[in-house]
Length: 237
Image 1 (cartoon, rainbow, N blue to C red):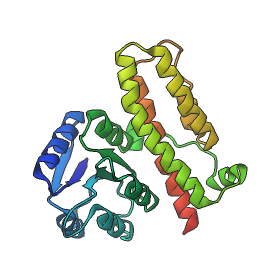
Image 2 (image 1 turned 30 degrees about the vertical axis):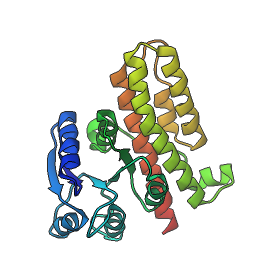
Image 3 (image 1 turned 45 degrees about the horizontal axis):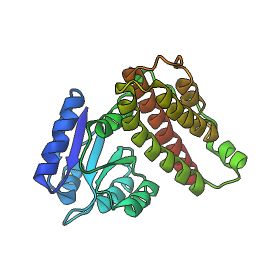
Image 4 (image 1 turned 135 degrees about the vertical axis):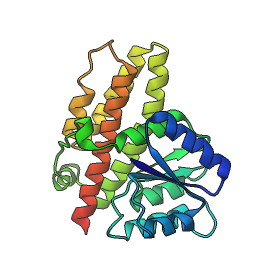
C-alpha cells in the first residue's frame, strides 16, 4: 500500500517516514508541501492513506484536504493531519471537512500505527462493518447529522489517544485500569450505534488482555467510526 507523507519540514518528514516504515511494509511517497502533493495526485498518484502537515507554505494541509475532498476520484483517500498541540480548533474544523484523524508532534509510534492498522484492506483484516443506520442513531439521540459527525470525530480522537494509553497500561501490567478504559470505549460504541465495534470490545476475557489483541480491536473500532462518518456524509449529500 502506498502512503503519502506531506511535510515541508524535512526532519519531521523523515521521522514520520521512519515510524511508518517500522509499522509494516509500505511504499512511502514524499511530498515537500501541499502544492507538491497536489501535483502528484493530479498526475495519478493514488495512495492508500495520506499523512499531511497542517501548516505549510504554498498550499496548507487544510487547503489540500479541501481539494482532495472536492475531487471525485480521490475524495475517499483517508487524510490524517499532522499537527502541533495548539492546533485543536483547526483540527476540529478539518475533521468536519472530512479528515480521518490526526497525529500530534512530537510523533509517537503508536499514533502512527493505529492509523495504518485502521486503513488496511478490510477483507484482509476480516473487518465487517455492523452498525445502526445513522438516521436511526440521530432519531434515538435527538440530534442531526452535523451533530452526529461531531460526536463521531470526537470519539475517533478519543480512540486514537486510548490506543497509546492502553499500550502503556498493558505494558505495565495494569489490567484492571486497561479494562476500565476499554469499558468506556464500549459505552461510546453503544451510544453511537456501533454494534460490531461494541461486541469486539466486549470479547476480551477479564484479566487476560494482550496489547496486540487490544490494538487490533481498537484499530477496527476506529475503522467503524470512519465508515459510519462516511455514511452520515453520504446521506447529507
